Each structure stands twice: as structure tokens, then as C-alpha cells.
Length: 282
Image (cartoon, rainbow, N blue to C red; front, side, top):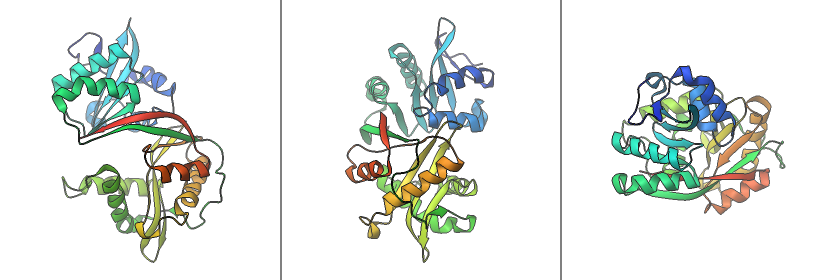
């Protein structure tokens, strides 16, 4: 294992798997993204396309930091955050965002901001929502899994959603090859849902992260010409019903606190708030 700049911090690998998953599984909703990535690819940085930094106290793994396209602290208190920030600053920014618990990300950004700033945007509080029971409204019967031959129909809606949500298009760097591959993967694995009428996506959402304990919905989008007609409520109900029946026992997502329409729709479906994250976008 490659030792970092302090003996309390090191890059983890597959030999640390049990300790890592024990830490992640203590909060299966909050850690669903990192847990999903590690369950799919393991801890080897070459295979994962990222590093996982481990912080130990008295010889026991106490906190993690996923360092890839996103920088994500896990179970990190002040001492761990100080070490993570020191190493991130020494390494240089490689991520496009910092995402995690509100206080942890605030601490990291206070330390990294003078070196990595300015941020393009900061989402100070994004409520984390969870649903473990069937939805409280009738699902849209026309929402279904997207077929492999419909990727070309789905992709423009995915690009529009990403651009609207993040503020920059996902295909500006490599012409969209990596983003298209990700969309294709979600379709191929049965984790992309949509209502498609006459070649137009009316509603769509994907299950972006999956563990045995939880799954995370992402990319919820309704065609701009069709908003305000209840498509998001009935569409999400359909996605949640399928997810609970076939994917994981908890369905989770996070939403911008200022997006009152989306928050109202999720409440109607039956989601309840169980936490909050903060995002720093570059």
C-alpha cells in the first residue's frame, strides 16, 4: 500500500475491503454512492479510476475519502478532514466536485478554497430523501425501462437534464463519449427509466448507485413543454415501485433545497428527509 504524507493516512486497496465496507454500511443511505462504486470495481486505484484514502486512529480505520471525479468524505471528523485536505492540496485538484455531509464539506472547502477556488457554484444544502415503502400515489403505467435501441432517444434528455442541473454540458470535454458510455451502461443494466411518446422523452430518471441496502435515483427530468402536469410525481412513483421490488430495499436521492417544485413532488410520492449534503462544483 502506498503510504501518503502522514502515517495516519494511506491509499487503501482490496486488502482493506472488509474494514471499508463495515464503515460504509454503517450509513447505507449516506454512503450509497461510494459503496456502489467500490462494490462494482473494488479498491484497486487502477481498476476503480479513483483512490480511496483511509484515515486511522489507534490502528483502526476511522474515516475515508473517495478521490475521483468527486471528492467525497465519509465518516470524517475534524482530524480526518485536516489530513484529507492536506493531501488533496498537495496532490492538486483532480475532481469536478466535492460532495458530502454539510459540515464535512464546509470544513474541506474552508481548507481547500484558498488553493482551489473560486468554485463555479456551491449548493449549500441539498436534502437527502429516502423511501422504504411503496409510493403513496399511482405510478405512471407508461414509465418503463429504456431499451438498448432507445439510447439515441434518451441521450439528448440526459444531456439537457445535466446541463440544467449542473450548469455546464456533460459533453464539452471529449465530445460526450464518456457520458454516452455511462448512459448506455445504465440502459444496459436496466437502471434507466422513461416515458417515451412519439420519439420524445416525457419523463426520465436513472438509478445511478446500487448496493444491497439502498439505491440512489438521479437525473430526474420532465420535458420543459410538459412540466406542471404531474409527470414527475407519477413517473417517480413508477421508478420507486420498480426499484423497491427489483433493485434495493431503500430508494434515496438528494435535491437542491431551493427546488421547491421537485421537493413537493417527492413529498407527494412519500419521500422523507433523512439528512443533507453540500456540493462544491468546479
